[in-house]
Image 1 (cartoon, rainbow, N blue to C red):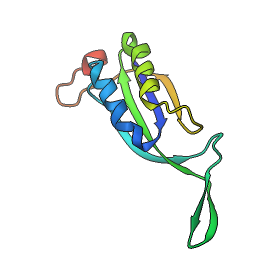
Image 2: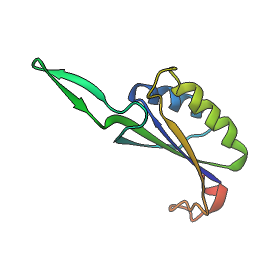
Image 3: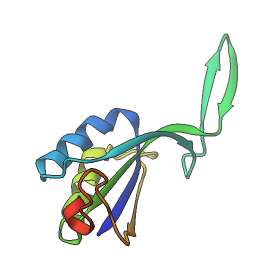
Length: 112
């Protein structure tokens, strides 16, 4: 099992959700996050004064998938999140030791 964490733009979340549901993946968690990378923040103007926002607001999408669904899930997220501009985000993949569905006690990929 793998855990996919994708840091993406807010307006791409719905497209990502639809792409994952289209693959038969029906669970995901999103969190509002802030950060910066090569984009190095952005400049805003408020009441005529210019100021710098160092941490750009993004959304973190977390999805647990079986190993055989990993490549298709990453490809679907990439396609749905990509605008071709700086700040599209990143995808991180890590191993999951175990997963337990609390309601039934199922574990491993059965819990996904």
